[in-house]
Length: 84
Image (cartoon, rainbow, N blue to C red; front, side):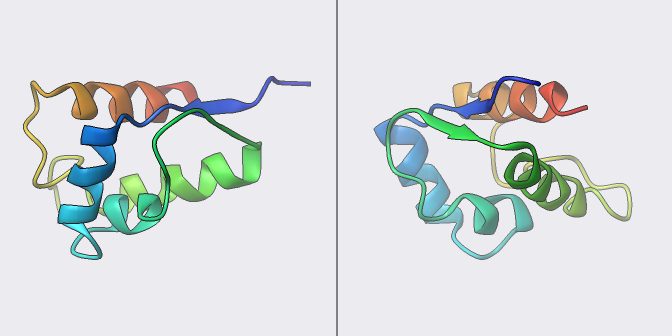
């Protein structure tokens, strides 16, 4: 059995997600996550991954509003890549 997927938002990540709010599918899927370690089962991880992917429809980049060089962008990208 695969170990749980992990999301580890910092306090700054949580503020960034709250700022993006319900504007984008990626942020809407993450609103409500608190700072700290969250272990997610496969179904929950896939639900979040599908939300991340939804923002790319039409050729858009993943994670609109986030700076591509930011830590939260890198963290969320790594989380998405881990879901197979």
